Image (tube, rainbow, N blue to C red; front, side, top):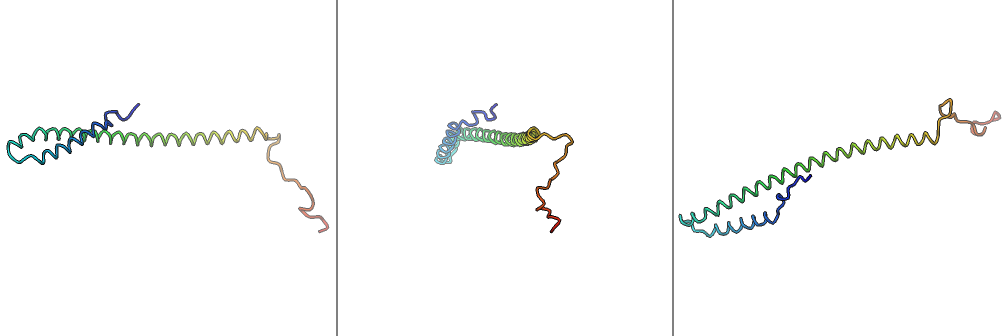
Length: 127
């Protein structure tokens, strides 16, 4: 599912709009301020207004799409963190099971008590 429609990123179209706006601005600056010239400039002004509106809508669509992508990325990161935690718990349980299978508890249970290996550790009655 694509969040960004292809038409939002139709860069050649946006480039043409920017070029047109620059051209129209240059042309408008050359028009003399007389009623006939103003009437001639009005269609260009309408085009500029329509182009501005189109660009503004495209920018808004891109901002909304960006916000959705950021939110989905955060959601996926949280989900990945949750899965990582679950996998670490499973790994810990498997490690415990592996230890239990290689060192099974003896009947009677409990840990072995330390035994004396020599009297040198504890000393002899002659000391």
